[in-house]
Length: 163
Length: 413
Image (cartoon, rainbow over all chains, first blue to last red):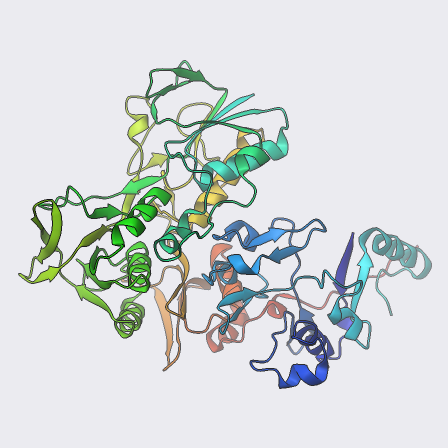
């Protein structure tokens, strides 16, 4: 299974991921028409920063997902690839998922009156946030490969972390 | 293993899911007094206004988890012989039993309330009954200004009726919001042309022949009504436990493993009386999210796990009243000392944070729900706020605040 990994040490806070995400979730999936769209398309991940650290915060598609457990309308479901997704037509905008998401990555679309969250760009090979990240702070990795690589690096360099 | 679950609501369903997840050979029997297929109960108010709306589970849990269903009311539990007695007199034996009977509406003692044109709103059948009865009628009165009452009122309004909510207490949404919050919602309702009368209650339902004509209030006011919805709260459905030896207070009493005082008998959902996570007081609640969690944990424990249940939050509501989003969690209106309350009251939003010592214990967010889940998590998991307090007050709290730069790890070989 592949997952999006965040490497805060590589993030420079350029917000390209946010733009990439919003564009991918716009009508024409094109930057120029996306900026003209009204209301503007919504991003599903959020660049957050403290003095210490900076990184995009995004949906983990949790194994025991609080949003999925709490959804009262049958809108949220887990798809065949393990992504927590919406059946938009079922969302009534009760905001229970917003209340329980411990990452704060579910937001409200006030116009359509539905909850908005990351869909893992299930139609794409590479999620938009990952492909728009210029520094490699967001990467799509196969979990097994990731573990392997980490072990490899540890043996070679004595540290798990990338320099 | 033979598992019996009394009740077909979400506590029973999530327990079945958990049982099936851990034991694919378990025999699961659900005893349900409601004939309907599994549905999302919080959705029933929408059935009043939206014809043909689908509120069933997309995948019927009965099929998905291989549950045998008995559409009958359970009449009693024999804890010693480990049998459930059905209303037909039939006995079903079990290895593990889950009491998930839920709760039923409180019907106040009001003259003229019994009979045609008066409804509660608890089941799918209730909602469809209201929908049917509303056709061609003009005036509705909702008794009770809680969440169910308000949802019902909005749905009736959308169906074209004149609606008045009557609340006995000083404010609507008592215990769900503080005074300021209740006022905001009252205003929203009034703007939506829904009448709100507080500090008053129905003294008598006036009927002409069989039909509801009007209601007379304690204040003497008479309000025209064709239909009356009783939404005066719910109480745990413990009738089935009479003479069973299973201890009940306001609801079924359980230990931290969701077991009742009798071996192999568990309880989950609205029927349970347990400690509130934040107040520490024995409480009952009727919230879907809590029932789902309790059912899930009970199901796991019924199949051999030993997971501790730390308790629920009696107040943990998210809702949307005519486009105004509202979240309230934990202790939202403390009336004793020892709490620090911070409010931010603006034209388009209201925020309230309640702290006790170094902990956030309650929030109300109206209008702006940004990162509400982060705050809920702080409350629910009792995470000390420490240096984050200021960020929380400013509304700047994000997940990033909980991440520290990992120390550089090196290993010398």
